[in-house]
Picture 1: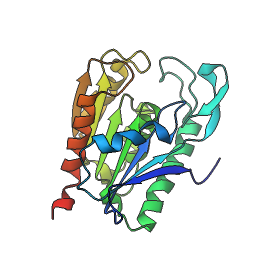
Picture 2: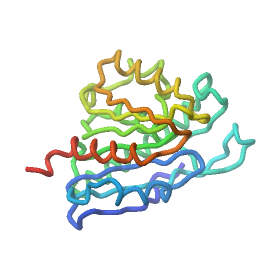
Picture 3: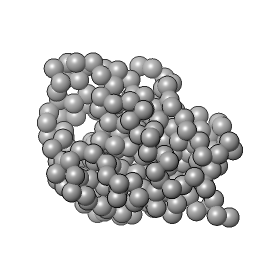
Picture 4: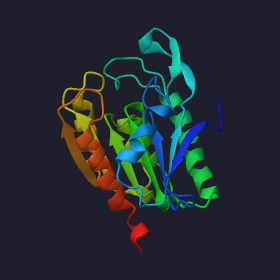
Amino acid sequence: MTTELECIEIGTSTQPEFSVIWLHGLGADGNDFAPIVPELGVDHIPIRFIFPHAPVMPITINGGMPMRAWYDLYMMDLVRYEDEKGLRESQQLVNALIARENARGIPTENIVLAGFSQGCAMTLQTALRLEEKLAGMICLSGYLPLAKKIEAERHSANQHTPILMAHGSQDPVVPIIRAEESRDLLTELGYDIEWHTYPMPHAVCAEEVQAIGAFLQRVLVKSDN
């Protein structure tokens, strides 16, 4: 397993005070969400956006075809049988990205973890177990993996970290019920969830991009000091 991921980086400033680590979905790469940066309306906040490329691995549900992925998928329902080993290995890769930002002068409390689909799953897998508080989590068109283990494994550091969850009501890839189940469990566990649905398939829409931009402005409030 690779220990350091290749990334695309886009900065709103040459002296960033914040980082947003954005994890793509199955079969995509870091280029997938890079074009979203100018649309977020956060150019006035000194942010380094990081779009890593997931490792390439064979995906069972796609006939064993190799593609970029954070973990293997075995079943269409996503949750009955999960690639726990792959999830935990990629969790360490994301932890390493956070540590690299720390080494570059960005404290964890100034980092937002974001992700779409599998990237959303990895955001929750990593952030809820992280031992240092993040600024926020952005969870798009995904779900909480290893849900039965989260109560025992979660760390208190991110108990009160704001979480934006958004999903398409017509999503045929990650059914909205998966996201609703995840939202309900996290709410039961006392997490701060901002929930949005949009009449779209497995995608991102303009209204959602506005909500993401507003969320970033809200959680990166130190930029106004």
